[in-house]
Length: 561
Image (cartoon, rainbow, N blue to C red; front, top):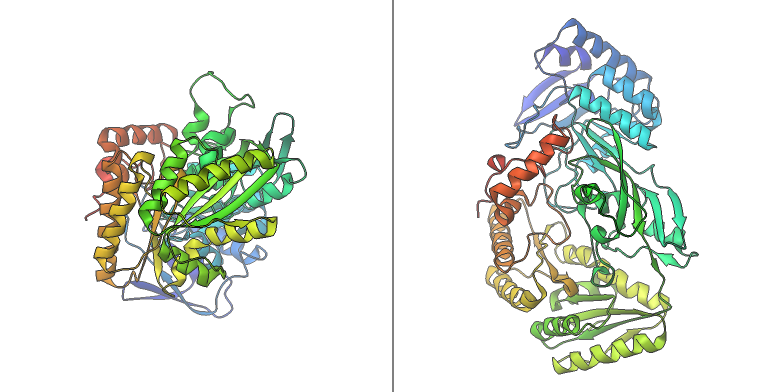
């Protein structure tokens, strides 16, 4: 270990079994961002570095809660990770003291932390992928503060990972090269609502439920509903969709413009409030879906929609999966205006009944919701769908007529992920996310169901089938190598099946670290090299959420299954 780290921590260290055990001096207030890995090259303990060490010690002892109060007494166990195969930035030993001091001056001592629990929370989303912790969590309060932090990171080549609500499912927020997690939670204001034009502008940290609560008395609502109470910035970054996409579209369709901080710290504003424009490159949609690899989204201008005057929800069981899927295809091809049409197979229904205390028939089931300006228009749509369902073996429709009943019904649907995990307590879940053309949906789902049965596992299928997107929740023990191999092999077969049908490896979850290899299979080296060229042009230092989107194809390993 470097002289720098020995001077900084005044700690004794012993390496055991690939982990770094740090025995901290009694009463020390040094925090974990200086205990393990950092961002100053090991072996370069110059006089400048020693000054940084002293500055770090002074700063970390003086900053008020939470940063200075989070040190543990006794033995601290910090996991060191091998250098990523995708790495272009090297792992270094600590955040320089001058950087810590500057960040403290930008956001204030109460808005940065290296508490162990916070580093862990910001080093992992809801996926099964291995946690990779940042060195520091920073919570800016304005676009200007974000700009200053980004400039500081660019000057010092410090990786920076934007963080919304942490509900992503492909390892998007993992700090695989350490650095700073930029938590946007403080930037949660509604900046303007234009009722006549049906649009609004919000800060990136507000969540979709917070936004709709704010809008409830305006007669407007924001329709994109991925299930989790995700932040608007995170939904923009992953190009999210969800249960309402079949009627209202995805984030790609509802984002009008953005304010973003680019990797050099410059602030750019894209788009306008106009509903269409042919003015220049479409920078808005370059950033929508970029997963924090091209810049930090700080404000989002959104389309809003009128709250429907009449809403009706229902569930309909089917004798078999094929009948349910064929009902979806026929409904969509008939042009019937459904707001939501969701599929739960019998395994998901059984899990949902147990987890959410519903009493649904344990059969393949469709969840419907209809929106309209009057009960008459909604009634016409429901009758048309009931007629189609009856032709494909659908049972009686069970209606949720009150707002409370509808809320309970859709909350049960949104909790399908947790219900599936509860089938095997303590296990992890790998949620697949393929999307295929609607004409191939039945074929893809039925082949997938047979594939699941061949594995010997009982895995739920659930999907936003109105736009061809469905998920298999592969519940498994990641410590069991045989199970892990089986899950990865199944995932590869399903993804390649969807791609071969003209579909995609991800309809809404995004790429993160989990689907880089499949991105390469789907689009090929030439397309990925173009993405890497864009990444290098906008982020030449490679600091923005490195090791994910924008990685050159030559550095992406094959999936291996």
